[in-house]
Amino acid sequence: MTTAITNVRIFDGEEVISERTVLLGNGMIRTIGAPIPSDATIVDGAGATLLPGLIDSHVHTDVAGLRDALAFGVTTELEMQGRWSAKQRREIAARNDVADLRTSGMGVTTKGGHPTQYMSSSSNLLIRYLYRFPSVQTPDEARRFVAKQVTRGADYIKIFIEDGSCIGYPGLPVLDDPTLLAAVDAAHQHDKLAIAHVTTAEGAARAIASGVDGLAHLFLDAPTPELTAAIAASGAFVVPTLVTLSSAFGNSADQLAADPRVRAKLDREWLDSLQRSMNVYPQGDLEGAYASVRALHDAGVDVLAGTDVSEPIPILGGLAHGASLHLELQFLVAAGFTPVQALRAATSVPARRFRLTDRGRIIPGARADLVLVDGDPTTTITDTLSTRAVWRRGVMHTAGAAGEHITDQTYTPR
Image (cartoon, rainbow, N blue to C red; front, side, top):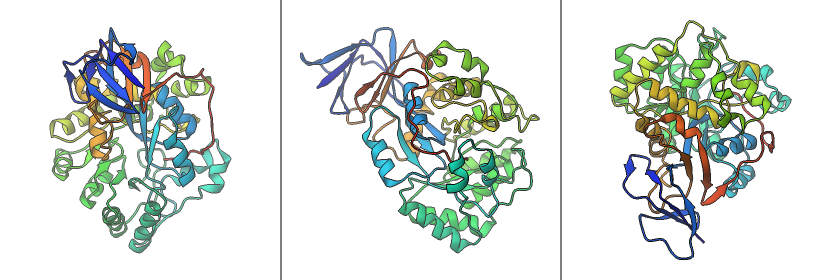
């Protein structure tokens, strides 16, 4: 069956194009701007903009999180710490009512290192039993650990460089340089990206010196011009997770929670979570973070939109699956991005950097992962929340009522 989305403004992942019609069939984008077959199902996109399905480049998720994400037009979540069985991965890949998933598997950390301090805080008792955190202390252990994650289906490798000084747990042990270098090298030996968790400029400098492909956070403290230049020269990307930094600085997302477009899709637990904050680094400020993001962008660094959303517990307040990515786009615009540049950060740029060649663009042959929003987010970024329809592999998604969740997977703290 063919679906024709007509009379619509099209942002193809890079720019607004002149064509006004997209044909979908067999879960793929068939043509753009071609004549409409007589037997096609017509979706009139008048007054709306068609976007590639959004990609959140930093989450920790379960099936309910994937479902919430899709309701907000996030068709792919890139998990930066988690444990899924091969069977669960196959089931997710076969479904069209939840976002698609990519995952790092379990991250590389040292004994007692981040994120073991979160274990006792999780609302899920199963985490405390199942996720007694694996750790490495030598280069050989790091290489074996990376190989195990690859064997278990990791799409990329997550490495923690976190001393706790900016997240309320100062003095956490961290990987030494030989072990860090071994983990990065092992990821590359297996043809996997190495993504580093950092929250300080010092940690970022260590990560870049080790040869990582990307930073999973922006540093909360102040960088130097030399660090910005080093990141740019390395070719690494940055997922700033400004929504998480904002929460760490003590800011809630209560305005997002109050938006009717958000309230209609989230249950009370998540709305309450949006109205809290982590407040672990109150000396930080968003203007400083915006300046860091602007400097990186101006230096030619690829910036990817991500949220670091996980579960709705008090210490991780201010975030919600799907909804928070829209706030991240607003923060990128506040930092100086144009709306088009912000949209690229959630579509074509993460698709390119994470080697997801079948999505992130509206082009013939790509997956029909799409979101139709009222208005024009290429000029008014807040219009991304005005979701009219979402397609997952060509199947139109209708969001269930808030609170209708399926939970068959546990979160893993970040």
